[in-house]
Image (cartoon, rainbow, N blue to C red; front, side):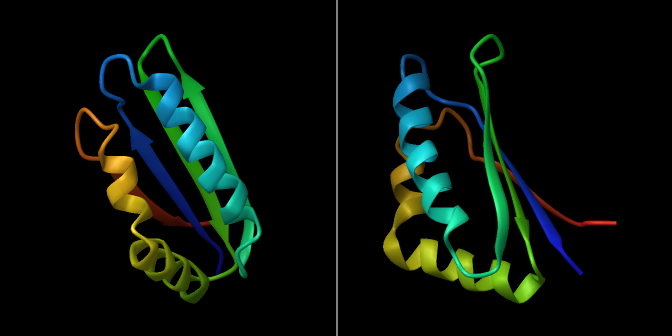
Length: 94
C-alpha cells in the first residue's frame, strides 16, 4: 500500500525564503529517489508555514529514503531554519 508523508515546517523569522529554497532543492531530489511516486512543496507566507507532501510506493521505500536523508545530514540542515520542530505524519493512501 502507498504511504503519504506530510511534514509541516515553521521557519524562523526572516528565514522563509531561505528555507523554501533549501526544501525545494531537497524535494526535487526526493522525486528521483527509488520508490517516490511524487513530492510537493506547499508554501503559505501568510501563515509562515511550509508543507512537504511525499507519496511513496510502499513503507519500505519511505524507510530507505528517511535513512538516506538522515545519513546525509539533511534533517540537521533543515533544523537550522526552524522556529519549532517539524510536524511529521504518515498515512496509508486509500
